[in-house]
Length: 293
Length: 174
Ligand SMILES: Cc1ncc(C[n+]2csc(CCOP(=O)(O)OP(=O)(O)O)c2C)c(N)n1
Ligand code: SF4
Ligand SMILES: [Mg+2]
Image (cartoon, rainbow over the protein chains, first blue to last red):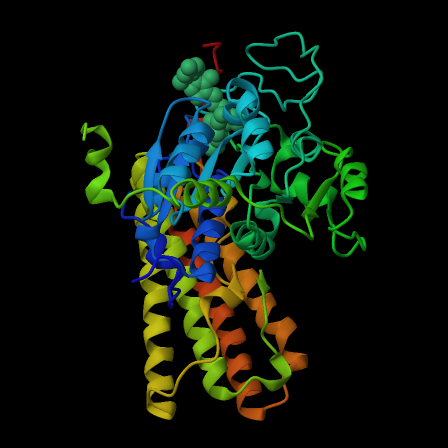
């Protein structure tokens, strides 16, 4: 089957036999369902999908899909996903991880994937905590948050993931949450279809170490749909304005979609390769270059 | 509990039956997932109950599928799983680590109440008399399912008031 052929797939075709070991009730159970549904809607066969993650509870997610997966090193999902995309641009590449993985130890990588416009979809399961290591402060934890690493309350301002990626110029920026599974699946699908770096911040509650207000009920109470607010996703400045409310309001939907997507790095590389190899001898004659006539 | 892209006004009996089968299938899979989560967390009583629920949902699904096959054979379906979300399936966040059988049954009861509300809400939009009759039947069945869970709840010995969560260690810095 050609790399871009699509055929009928169902969500269950992307579900692996591995049983998740997340805590029952964890938001990540819904996220993986949203991913199954989005992949089925896009219709690329599982063997044409590479799913790369870092380390964390959320980073277990590739194992629960039938896509090729690599549960890499803490904070390093993006550079590895980038390498995979450049080595095999025909693959549909997804990267995923937690707020700690993406915005703390791995925070430096995002800027570079965005400025190169690598065609991957990056899903961050933002639960404002380090879940896997049992509830330490994360870069998106709110100021004043008491955890085992901030017993008197955090003195730090949180990172705003939405503003962060918008400021670096990502072509697609959205937010989703298990409070609206249908919407989440549609947003992930749209992110996958976007030609270029696409970022989705997913508010995925940690039922074990998360705070009460960050659970589904609390999130529902502060959620607002961007489309019903009349937001125009082509307006980057309006998107940045809305993104400032991260942490107080939960805006769901597409903040920004570049109406004229820039060429991707992988496409530019292929173009350059083609230009430079225009006058190159055929592959089978390549050794001739090293043989003295 | 949501649907996407279903026009209830124009719903035919074939599509309504397919929808009902999908609702049962979704619930069955969710209960199986919950049972696996309970296995994972070594809570066998809750796992057993969720498996019992999965079996019930499977039975209802099979009966509805047989009805569909009898009436419409293998005529193609216009509704898909992508159109329904958590109709009768318990919400993902209804599960908890170390669930007692009582908590598991209460989660199942809540989802039966949710499914009943779905059929009640959908009924006024329906135009086809046969579809209406089917939805009324399904609505009433949800009440029977609730009774079934209530009966299981009644069999339980009184709660000690304690839960395993009372004994969970506080997180430590790593
Ligand atoms: C280099 C390195 N540093 C630290 C760790 C320990 N560690 C594992 S996961 C994690 C943070 C997990 O938080 P997050 O990325 O938000 O994922 P979550 O578990 O919340 O989904 C940390 C600090 C590690 N595995 N490797
Ligand atoms: S610790 Fe939190 S993030 Fe990790 S599996 Fe449990 S609920 Fe999910
Ligand atoms: Mg986290």
